[in-house]
Length: 132
Image 1 (cartoon, helix red, strand yellow):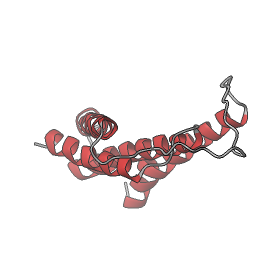
Image 2 (tube, rainbow, N blue to C red):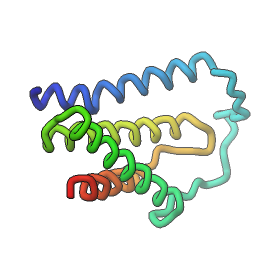
Image 3 (tube, helix red, strand yellow):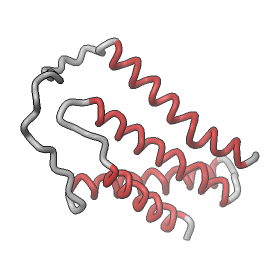
């Protein structure tokens, strides 16, 4: 499989599917009642610290997902090492990115680049453990 196919299947396609599902869910309200009015100013500031429990969760879940997906792609589907790394890291990153887009749409949450950094570090740690 070519590099473009890996990029499409591992990163772009899951991101498109997740974006469409969240957009469909939010457009039909999905039974979620949200008491949030954008016209009213929100005076509370959302804190996003570098060292927080949320970042540890992002790191741990990303490490678990990337390591598990690498093992599945490499051992179960018999892909070579390089393609398994591409697929597992891009799929895990697209899940983390989709989660941040989801957070952006919920009240009192925001898109966090710090969470994405924790996801990337977790992907690296998971792949380091899985490939040894």
